[in-house]
Length: 408
Image 1: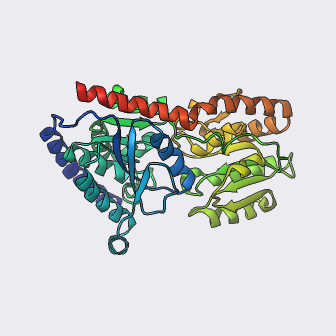
Image 2: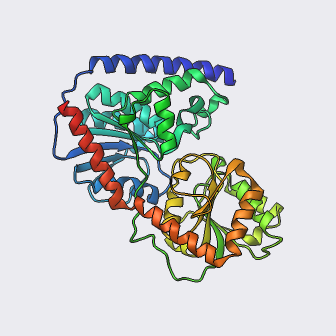
Image 3: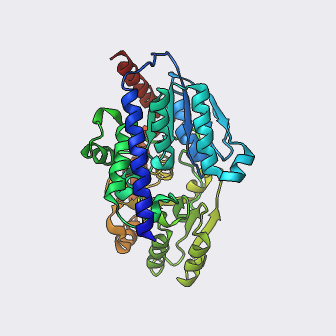
């Protein structure tokens, strides 16, 4: 089955690559005009309002943005200068939400001819966006939230329902995805490691920008509340987040910390399985699965340490939020998490998901209140660079570079 899917995807990407290259050749001279403010069209899939806000609000606060149109299938929170566009309900029933959203994105691009068109994640949003950008002469932006994993091996390690069916590394599909990335006018990644990955594979370094999502400092700040939990995880309970590792860490800590408490804030396809695992490990009383929450700030204030055990990350928004609120971070040494976490200074980067190393790092913080406080203070200092206003300035730079390209 995997072999058949591999053949199909290789053929599909061959067709796509040839189409993209032909369109790019026909449009190698630009008719774009420099503008004081730009209209932007974006699409993506989101699992929480906070994730949407952290990415759209900094862009909307850029003084170079006139209007943002967001094509989505989930209801958007109100954000200044952001207008939602939802696919027709009947179309969604016929072809499904993702295809309906991409069809709508194509239609709106043709009708509105935005100055900038952007996609969150490459599969499949970015693949469509770069093609539309070339076809309709829009500045195209790839917002790479998942890091190199989005293209590595052809995307077989992602949660994309199509590309993960590859089941193993596919160099042919990977090259096709890298080719698509190289055609974007701007690529936004979360850290230096991701930038280096794409540069090594031929994407122009001048077109790659390092930028996190923007966190509202007015909502995420340290509190004086009494701490009732030791650990907190905020995110989607899915395989890539490896909540099973987190549960094993709690079980490892329990003998020396019998009343240790971990909060798991979020929902997802693996929640029931993880609840059953907690019971089998004898830690049900030590772990609270609190479900999806609209406002997570108060949950962070209840905890002492932020924990993340993911197989892969870009630069985790939940980690930034936690650090901004003064929580040390004990996280996997993956993706771009090292952009903010410095070992034995404001947290710990754990290699190879070493359960003993996690337990030792966490125990060292919980057993030393002064160290916990010092790490928390330093965590906040470094996370403050991800405040909304600071990220908006980085968008100003991207649009200024766009001006230079138009003038050139």
